[in-house]
Length: 124
Image 1 (cartoon, one colour):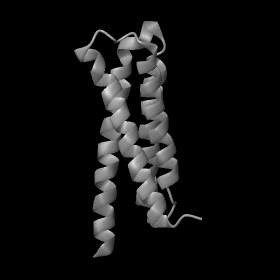
Image 2 (cartoon, one colour):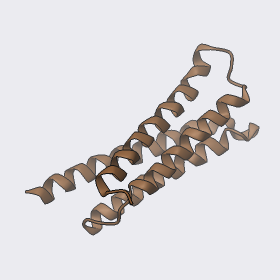
Image 3 (cartoon, one colour):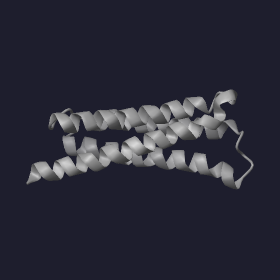
Image 4 (cartoon, one colour):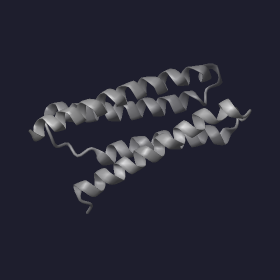
């Protein structure tokens, strides 16, 4: 059984790796003419799924009701990343994947900031 600290550390590492893979696979087509390569789509999808799994690993269900809801927002942002990855496989909707990626980014930034603020407030 993993301790809470180890589980959160593993979750944070997986989130970082998943987001890094997503960024590389999203930015690489800007520098090369590889935008249609299937391996980049699968790489982006793997990064999104890694973030989703990491968010479920890192959720412990403790804390105030507000912190629990903010953790649910982090899971929702990971689901937006997965939706963004699935949109990339549909040729008619390919241009819309960026909107879901940015929506997930905004939700993640807000939830992360508010979780940190709530944790600091509860430590006082």
